[in-house]
Image (spheres, rainbow, N blue to C red):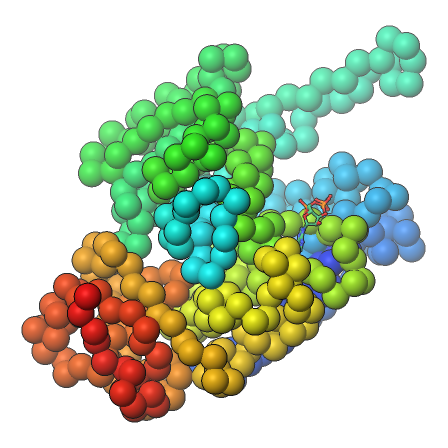
Length: 439
Ligand code: ATP
């Protein structure tokens, strides 16, 4: 049995609360899909800082290095400057392990209401790829005459050809994946920032020439902020600098329902170092300790980690369990209009994962544009009973069950052309409902 070694840094504020639920669900996932976990919790963060004067011990990166991945909660404390907490824990890990891709999906899930009028599930379905090691967060600069009336501060953005090229290339490759729509939008401010971002624009144009099948768009960041609100459905893969990606993903989180749903991965695509998975939200001191924090962003970040570790089926099942929980609507935290506690949401996801739906009908929802996702539809056993056989669409985030079928091409063709809804489980565990209906 494969066992994954994970360094867990719950961190500050609501970090430990949401990570607890993430671990609860991940353990259940391992049991169901027959892989093991070895979690090691590291008490780094603001409490550590109060005791030791630093956010993590000296040699912290060396401690993390042998792990398969890092599962991170949140960092930040009202009594410590954000630049201290960030620059001494999160950013050194991102830079030290060359996690140059920060991947942040912005997906409007079924069962979630967008504050934007008239948006239906999956109308918003973008992934923001944020450059994660240089740009505006390169930590180059300094103070001069500090504390005097003449004091000055210089903060330098760093854009290297190498740094721009690799993250932009990652975005193009992602756009080509069968679950994406072959479009990359680059976001800069090269009209006002005439060096680094002009280099970025140039590299974007050069790399795009290698991907003639991928549509491109270049936006200034102010226009991009506006268009995230005005026409979010037009975005597929968005690639942006460290700062702009940071800001845009908060907008993406809000238009898709809540900060409490936004997941992220800090990824070293070359896999030389452990990658780190964390919710986009911060420590949220206003709700810490109240049991109100939505753990779904942490759970979905856990699903991203599971996918990164190569357990695609398990990741699909976990994402499907989250969708089922959202659709059922009876275990939602207050940010999503519910009354459930952090723990109750974790339990509901685990129950959905284990196929115990407590009488709540499972409403299954199928993409309108299924054919382009054909590459990832494969034969599988039913994710509820592990018994029935059928076709499984493993595309993020839901994974859909069509079946039962025989394994003929005609059946596959039929599945691709048929739009189905209200399917729950397979024909074995849900007799009578596990059949396709044509609209
Ligand atoms: P930090 O300063 O550490 O980045 P923050 O809490 O000030 O963190 P955000 O994480 O962006 O900033 O959160 C903004 C607000 O969104 C929080 O104060 C909280 O009210 C809400 N929020 C964030 N995460 C969640 C969550 N998981 N569940 C519910 N509400 C959340």
